[in-house]
Image (cartoon, rainbow, N blue to C red):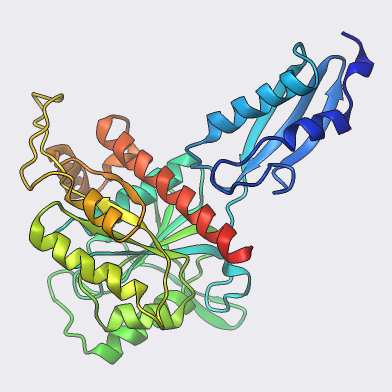
Length: 359
């Protein structure tokens, strides 16, 4: 095959027939093709994904190869490098200028494992290659320090440009701030609504978050002052609702969905996560026991036309990992894979939401 058989124009032409499956536009129009280089009978280029946690990475790679082999020449040698540039809405967010996406993780009621889901989603997104932070907004019952084995750490305060800024605690490559770092766990802090609001404002505005792709907010259960303050304070990319399959949890999750949906708040719902979906004993890893009912979260998501991000099994190892201070998504195994699957679905929904809002 001769050198003249391929040209940059031919390659770009072929790639302009490849659609990004979620955004429904071609890769060239979306600006996802970079650094096209030709050699003798070969081509190299970079595909810039909307998130490193893209679940369709391999499909996009295969579609690119197929298009070039079909439309340019069947024998072209193709080398594709995959990188990611996370999209964000936050170009003019004065409170946290370097943070691309702020995602609220909420639940209608307590005890559904919202903090566990937050910690493990953050870990999975970090493992995929994203820059991630957690703001623990559960002011009176902070769980994040314990789950990351950081309850004895205290953040430093540094003067930057004449202003005192809190330096977040960094653990497993994730930046985090929590009332648990600032108040001893043995003495609960009695908070009135305005004090909570002021604490949350400081966590955003006075913390040196730096550059982040995703900042996850672990909210207290229910819909309280904190929730209202959050939506007034920050332009959220969207919200994730955590529930269990039980009827009472689903009923409360519905209130959470409706809170973010109501006019005047209008926060996009990125999806629903069902935690404790089924019990799998360690000695019978292939068995699933649906202790709290089956498919409740999926049905609720369908009813409200919200993406269903995935199920988390009720496995002793997930609880143990949180208690030991290292979220299970940090390691390998079925539980880590479940969280990675949910994180990929979440990253996908964030990219779709951002594309819609910028269209």
